[in-house]
Length: 227
Image (tube, rainbow, N blue to C red):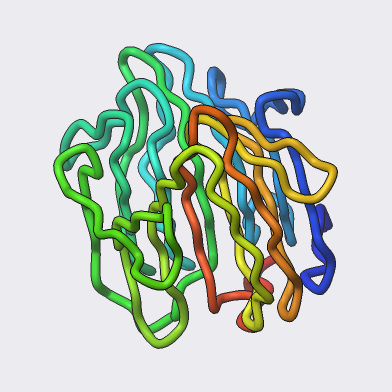
């Protein structure tokens, strides 16, 4: 069993653009692993790259799959998903993923409520954002919310300062621009996990930043039954 950043009570920062690509069992598909519990069946958070013309064989996501297209166009039999597409394939979903032109996605596996059967397909390029009245300089694009988690995109204007305890923890992936967090500088594809009760102290950079954010989920870490 692989254990990668599997201590969910610890802060983790990885610069996804700098990590080595690791070959998957499928030719042309490579991964940068951010966290993982399991083997090929795993609770996992990864950045995945599909070479042009690569694809997986048909398979079922017994634990669900959530992903955001970072670059290129992801495809399956349901359609084409350009950069900015946010997809939730709940448990029991079956598809044949691939990319004719190549793509990069940020993907989370085996992190759904086992009873969830609600798919989501959102083109974030086509929806707006709402200013957060409690955090000046922050605008939010809601993506998903249920009793287990909240997922959104946040845009922080240049110089925006955020300083808050995160009682339920948080995960953040920088999509564009960047910010500092303490002594660390985060840029595109930097991934930060703030544990439950941890503090986020961030200052948006000169270009501002857009960040994928998930909260309220870190108390629900489960290992796939076949891992």
